[in-house]
Length: 394
Image (cartoon, rainbow, N blue to C red; front, top):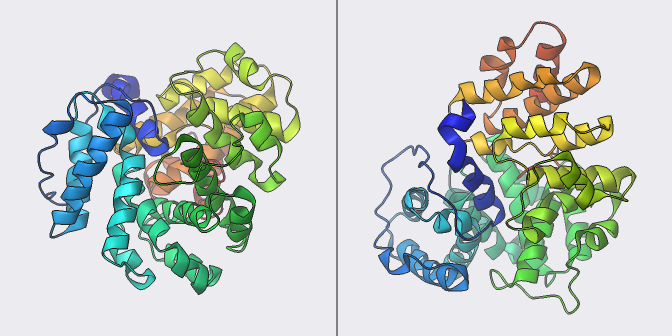
């Protein structure tokens, strides 16, 4: 069972991907494809939290990457060290810290757009490695602007897995924010130039970087009059970017809060209607139970079918990236708790997102294990749709 094997670890993966709370329990290290380069001695940062901890780890991790003969092997080693950290602080903050480490490393070594893909980590890890990738992309932002959207899309298409292609597109959102002094609207316009297939996922990086700027992370420029309330921020966004805006909102503004009951959704989303309500419920689901199976159970308790669908969209399947395939199958099997069209929606959505984290392999090892008929068909249709924009994903 996921809760037995992963219980404490699952929370860390989503927090690491989104810049979560300071202290968390220990998680298991993900599998690596090679022996990681030694990460050096991080003992000097042990026990530090908050700004002190982030500052210490930023300096030490930068030294590790700078001194490494193979920076990508060093990043693997850093990932292993983050998972081994007893306090959980490094893992929970590694994504954001590695943004800075990679961006500054790329600027010092004069990384070019032509060499970008050769320097991106070949891993689906959403924490340290994804943060490192986004930092590299941010550093070459001026070249990306000069090259134009066609070249940008071509670069992401060269990534080895669907998850890495998503992460690459997300990274462009960060890059566009730096080109526009952390202003949302001109950055979204640059995302639009990537085309409708990439713009929503690019906007995830825009909103992620916006919260960096509000919180003073990664050398961002704080807005003169920052909007810090999700309702105000997301209520002012173009319709096609409302869901990405809300998806990031509560992770960044409700740190430490956990949505655990139907009434919690109403506390956060009461009074909203239509798309804003749906997107808010998805965002609230993201800070629900760390075990995605428990998330689905929570969603099943909502009274409105529209709310149930929106809640399912927030299922954190990326928490299963480093876990056995049978856990992914167990998760999608839990769609049986829904009835009729809601079950079909669940099978299709989880087919899509689990297809992303398995790079399409769910179609072979997972969908055939579902009941014949509608469940298998919906799962397969979801996997086959994974190359389209994900919109709500991290």
